[in-house]
Amino acid sequence: MNQQRVNKVLEEMQTRGIDHLIISDPSSIDYLIGYSNHPGERMFVLLLSIEGNHVIFLNNLFYLDQELEMNIIWYDDTQDGPALVAQYLKDANVVGVDKNWEARFLMRVMELANDECCFELGSICVDYVRMIKEEEEKALMRESSRFNDLAIDQVIQLCAKGNLTEKEVSQEVEGIFQKLGCSGNSFAPIVAYGANGADGHHEGDNSLLKPGDSIVIDMGGQYHGYCSDMTRTVFYKEVSDEQRKVYNLVRQANEAAEAIIKPGVRLCDIDKVARDIITEAGYGKNFNHRLGHFIGRDIHEYGDVSAVFDMPVEAGMIFSIEPGIYIQGDFGVRIEDLVLVTEDGCEVLNSYSKDLLIIG
Image (tube, rainbow, N blue to C red):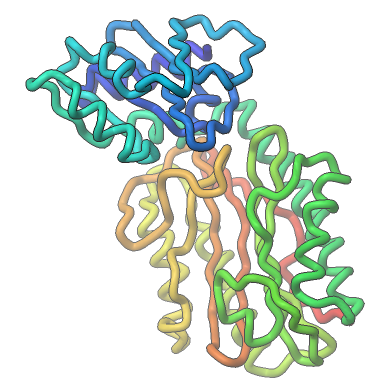
């Protein structure tokens, strides 16, 4: 158990008047106690108590080869797992439940809990702690992003051959990461040619490159449990005047947003800087998503860089800056970096060039 992290969560619980917290998110459980499991359909729960009586509920199928320094409740497939959890909530007043726990488990616990017990969303107690990265986490995120820089260069070289479909390039990405020392992808890569680049979450198909196509490449790997994520847009053989204009505009928005990041600046104001640049140039309706998301053990963690998230940034936060312009039926451009907030600014974790690149 990482007692320091658990203590921070307990402090958040106390601040919010939560006396018990049910955590089912495998990433958060691993973060707090150093035990990784992917339970599938079976119940997997860490129950934290403000009194310090922490319990983890494990199915007999799960493999455990380490000491967890807490009470372990084993159950099998014939037992009522939620009923076992409810037994540890007899004296609970306010139970926080994370956003991941399935209703089929939660509803059963609520049915069996005492009448005075109330339940509320408690994910924030862990999310706020995970939001600020420790030194070891920062180092892993730097290394994960360094591998991503190396990997995307290889992917761009594959695209430059001009004879591979989007799907074929995408299928090569995981192997590239593994050869560099990562466990694999942190998410399914996006490789989008030409008009497909106007679909922000395009799934690679059998499209082939044509001269003048933009190529949006959004990819990330996972290194020692920490995710990278970056996007670069390049052009095949030639670039039109409008494509060049849009590319330079997106790059300007990306770099302007990164330039204002420092502790105390609100996330919504970072979004506004990038969005205003694109809107004033007449492409506001073509920038159809938030500017960024938080990242770490999961590709998307709590917190985002958007108009509705007014939290001031703090040193240790890591999030993406990824403005984009998408011209339906024609092309798309997105440029994305990860940034680490420092004591007096930010460190951009991606070093791969943002100069306009024509390949092939």
